[in-house]
Image 1: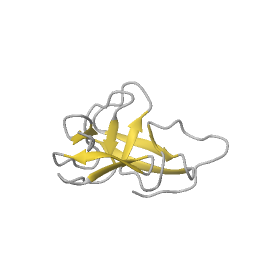
Image 2: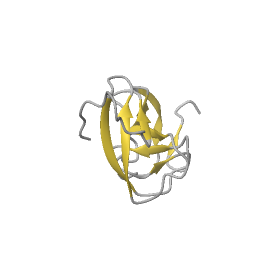
Image 3: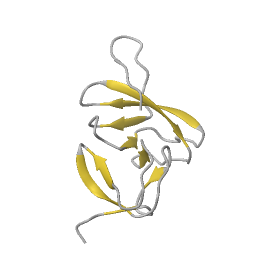
Length: 105
């Protein structure tokens, strides 16, 4: 995940938002994020940007893997543990209830 400063006039509207540089998932913030898109993202904590090739259609509010995640890994959002990866997820793939489960139950 490469990053660079993203501020000032002419800033692009992001497709994805991550909250922390430690996050390994980001959230789609536009309707109609389509497979095979070079999605532009912003890390809100430090206002840096990244790009990830989205491999699936991603509904608004759903997550995208920012790195390859293996079964047993921890999904990180807001810099916090949000669940256990239960099925391998490649970078750019949809992250949701079919491949991540809460650790609470």
